[in-house]
Length: 556
Image (tube, rainbow, N blue to C red; front, side):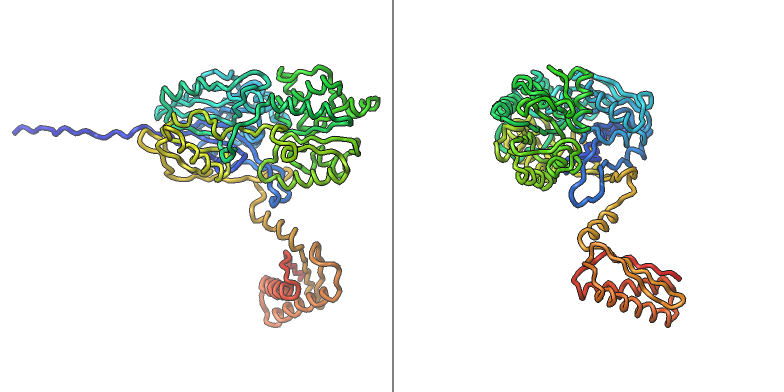
C-alpha cells in the first residue's frame, strides 16, 4: 500500500516590528521610542519634560524605562534626532542605567550631550557617542538600517530618519519646521522624503504639535526682519528672550544688534551653555565678543541688548528675576523694552502671563506674540497643511503631541487625496505591532513619569505630590499627644488658619476626649492614634469646611 503525502501549505506569518513609545506620545516632552524586531531593540531619543503648576517641588520629569532595563541585553543602539531638552534631557539619567551602547547624533547634538553629561560627572569614556552626518546611513544591530534626513527646525543639525527593517520601512519626520528661508540656508530634504514615499513607506510617524493650527509657519527670515524693525525703533535698553536652544534665532539677534550698533550681553546659565557649545562647534559666529553686565557701564541705553533666559516664565530664570526685582545686578526701569520671541509651551501660559503682567507694572514696554503678531516667533514645529507627504505611507502614527494634536493630525491625514489606510492614536507604553498585514496595539509595557526632585530620582510619587497640593490648598495640622504622666495634646499648624486660641482649644479637647476614651477601653496605641485622627478630622471639617493634612503623633 502506497501512502501519498498531502501537499501542505503552511501560512508563514509576515515579519513584524514592534513600535513602543515610552514617552512623547499623547504628551509634549520626554520623547523616547523603542523599536523591537525579534531579539534586537533600537532606541530613539531620551528627553525630559518640565513640571506643571500642580507638580510642586519637582525639578524635571523623565521617562520610565523599566522595559529597557528589563530587556537591556537586546539593546543595540540609540539615535538622537536633535539637541532640544525634550529629546536629550534625560540622557544623564537613562544612559547610566543601560548597557554601554553606541549613541548616534549630529555634531551640535552630541556637543550639547557631552556638555550635559559632564555636569553629571559622566566622562566621554563612560559612553559611546558617535557623530553622524545628516545624510548618513548606519546599521544598528542586524535588523535596523537608519538613514538620516535633514529637517529644518529651530536648532541646527535636526534630523528625521528612514528606518528600514525586515518588516518594512518606517519614516519618522522628527521635529520640524518647513522653513523656506532658514537662517543657515539648509532646507529640509523633502526630495528624499518624496523618493522614500515612491519607494514604499509602511509607517509614517509625524510630529503633531501644531496639527490643529491652520496656515503656514512664518519663516525664520521673516521673524528676523520683524525683530530688526522692532529693535531699530527702540531707544532704550532691549531685553530679548527666547529658547536657549534656538541657535538660529539667537544668531539673528546677535547680527541685528551688531547692525544696530548695540553690544550683546548674554544672561542665563542655559543661554550661555548653548552659546558656548554652538561657538565651539562653529554653529554660531560673533561679530563682537559678548559683554558681561559689569562691562556695559560706559555704554548708553540704546547701545545695549540683553539676550536672556525666561521665555517660559521659569521662576529662577533671568527674566522672572528681573520682573520681580530679584536680580542681583540688573534692575528694569521705565524706557526699557522686553521682547518675548517665543510662544508658551502648553502648561506654561499662566507663568508667562504672570511675568508679562509684572513687567507692565514696572512700566517697561513689552512685546510678545499675542500683542505683536506671529512674526516675533515662528510656530515650532511648523506643520498643519504642509506635512511631508503622509499620503505616501500605508499606515500613520501621529506622534509628539497631546491627544487633541494627535486626533487633529489624524483628521488632517484623511483629507489628503491618498489618505493612509489606517491611523492609530497611541499612548505611552503601547506595544504597536506593525507588519504588512497588521497595525494594532497588542499589549502594554510600563511607562510614565519619573520625578526628579533635587538629588532624588523616582523617590517622589503621585501620592507625595497629592500631599503637597493638599498642604498648599488646605494647610497642615500636627497633633502631638503625650500620654504620661497625664494625657495632654499640643497643636502646631501652618497654612491652616490664623492663630486662633479658641479653635486650638476646641481641637485639643476633641483630640483629648478620643485619646482618653481609647485608653479607658485599653485599645492599642495605633488604634488610639487613629481614633484621635478621625475625631479631629470630622470636627475640623464641620467647623471650618476645610481638610488640612493631619499628622497625629503619640508619645507614650
